[in-house]
Image (cartoon, rainbow, N blue to C red; front, side, top):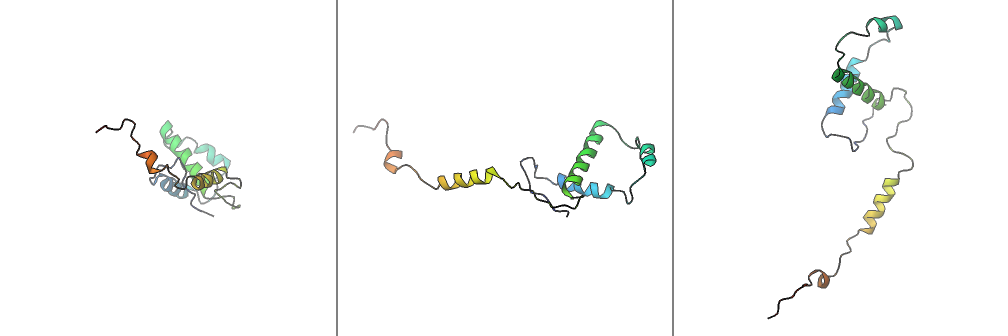
Length: 112
């Protein structure tokens, strides 16, 4: 419950994720409003495109990372092909290099 997910390739290295998560927690109502109240308040506040986008981002971050359903939560897949591929790459690139006599061979050696 409320675990912090691992960073992925889309992470920007800033605190935008934590801020969106904090804003989501602060914006949660204490009780769920009825349908009529939702319809009355539908058009309150700022409704321009940037605000709608930031609200959607905040809701997705909050719903996705706070585990509202209280189910089992894992940020890794059972079949992770990249782990096996990366392990093979590390094992196969274990420091084998060409011999020095091949590396430092002159293509046009000077004649003295």
